[in-house]
Length: 66
Image (cartoon, rainbow, N blue to C red):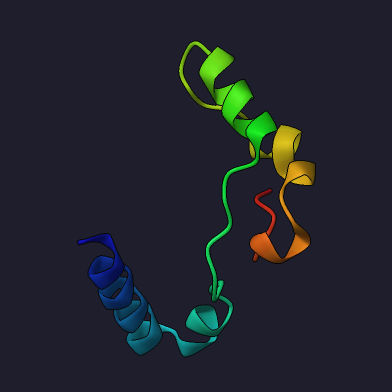
């Protein structure tokens, strides 16, 4: 069910903002093991992106949050 939802989501984004849709990744990347370990050891299951951004390949991030 998920791939059809991704396609619908992409189509909606593309209709509303084609430039944003053009920046969407074309392939799936796994979550790095260091990020998973951080999430599992966190009490809330959440981690700051800025602390773990370096573990993701450069092509994964479209924009850095401020």
